[in-house]
Image (cartoon, rainbow over all chains, first blue to last red; front, side, top):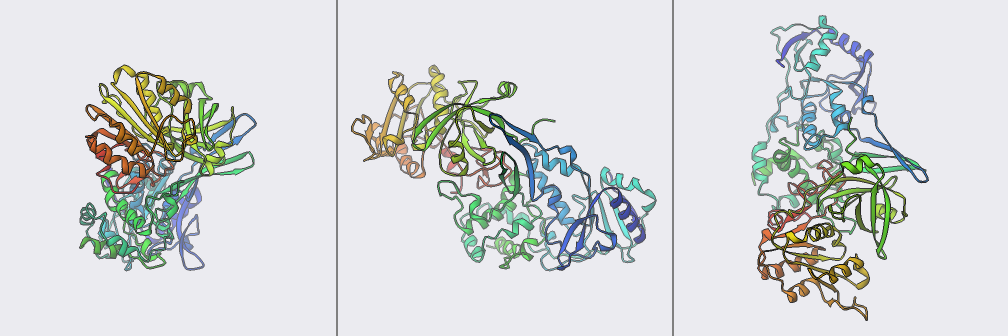
Length: 336
Length: 278
């Protein structure tokens, strides 16, 4: 679909939000009592933040929940029955206020969940998702979207992308049919575009991802991995805050004769992730697991999934308890 | 809507064989006739077997696709799921998802000699292809099976070893590690690589299929090379930890290769291109 450009006045934005949040689930960022930025369903407009750089967790849980039930079962004396999850009950969700890096990550996740065979849980949630993204007018030293082929106002993954203007109004890029459907709810809020300039932050490019990918092709045995992961404590925080990490575990939870099978977020940083029952572990030490994380995102995924496994949000670095900085490491890797 | 990709078939345990004190073989029959009708698989493929409430575990299908109407799995009691599986009885329910993964290229092997080499609990992943080729016996030339275990009691499929031994069109060599023999043991005594070297099967027009613990593979490869086998004529299976079985959960990869999608069957020529992550 061809992109259309409109203007939303500051006051109209509030109207739009209120219309949406009274008629459907809207997932929007708020500043929690501990100053962390988190997403909540249908917060009051006055609580929604428009000035955050990054939420503590990404928003991938709207399409890939931390825990997703796969089916329920009942074990009777001689018979077991399995009850499917009714995916048609998954509700429409409007994601409001997420930044271009997080929104681009939906494409990345799709390249994993819909590679080869389609994961219908993910696909259904994505189908039900409308993304009203907000360009970034703020950034910090952890941001590196421009190193992974994105910008603070990339439209990838958004259905509508809003960019704040100097006078407080917003430019709206309506990018998809889903975005059009939002406009058609209240078309009078979308006016003709003006020449006012959008406030877009600038993010310094730290590395060239294509060079990193090329370098990784021959870097498997490089001492780089050991040297750069010595302080990694294998906590897995990087994977849990990452908008593109999609590795999961599958477990059963029983309560008497009934129970469920679910999948939950997992991390390649954990030793248990690849541990064989025999005790053998193909990735036995942390450096091998750190290597897997980088290789997967910057080498294997470009080749196998035709996508880059990183959107430059910087969460893995800002959230790392031992201050490992992925952008710095990739910059160093590029030059080994 | 079609069924969820995570939903297992419900299977009934139709037969139980106690292979060793901690290894069992189950024959599983589909509870739903329609599912049984649609189901097909090929030699080398694997599945996710589950006890509802305990979880899933990954094993190959151990029976041959030439034997229709059921599948068999052989497993050792080792972790939570396999212990729960081992506690099941005839008529109980097992969940099964699959088949997943690639297959042994048995059509390419037609007209060739086949040399199967297995150690311990690694005979089950090979049993499927062994029976598959035996059931199509006239398509292949000599079939040789070299099978070793730590001790006589650790040999699995004892009744089938007898059957293979008695057949004039199959050459079976069984061996146990020194000290693992019983007074009436008539097979070889020694490790698989040495027994193989002694038997010295010809590599001429022959494909070798090798499955076993890493240490056995490590010492058997040089013997195969010495016998003149080329890397492309040696096949094995890789068995990394898996959860989903279809390339999404992210743990079985060896470098860029997914064991669950690109494997589990690999030629040694392919293995040499992979990083050591298995």
